Image (tube, rainbow, N blue to C red; front, side, top):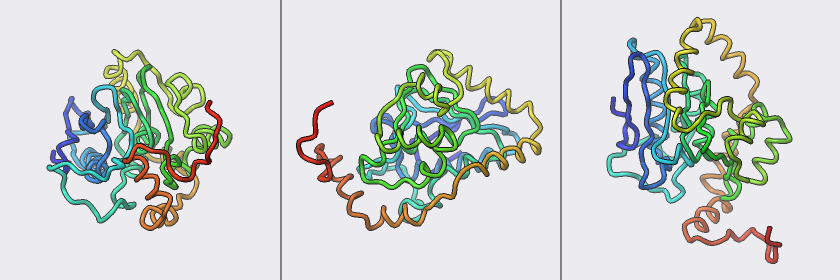
Length: 259
């Protein structure tokens, strides 16, 4: 199965497909083609009569850190809908997939990578994994997080994670309800496969209705504000430039105490 990029690949294990995120030279940062490729992987599993579930995992010590802030592509990447738009992103496709989607989080999981894990039916997480919602550090208005994170962890924890952009470990992520299963690192693959098998023992049509009811708990996603800011916002451009230039963005006040 060609997902439109060499940085994603599909491996079959009986009726279960594994989607492997493999761009270690860029720490698995998503190009637009990789985001769109994840959406293709979900569609593929839902349309292939021989497949019943999808497991998404990363390589090395990284699951996914989100989008490539350098705007880089890989030579094998296919063209995607112009710009980073709603049509490009995979999160709704993962959330609404009839076929179960499991995330096997093997390491660093941030930004768009964390949204992939959150929108999956079950996130099975290595004890070594770490999590972060870093968008505001780069001036990015992430409407998806604002809509879905409170439903996962409550308003107080959502405010904390979004506004502080602090990093948390797997134990804290499990404690606050961000993810549901933490396992020894060496057992991650087996435990993710076990989760897929467990879900596949439930009735598909009834399961789809329950998923629809669960998804109704999420708030409205304000994509208009998000994508307008990405297109013309000054803070997001300063955030990207400062990241590439390895300096602090210009909105950080002078004389902040060190902590």
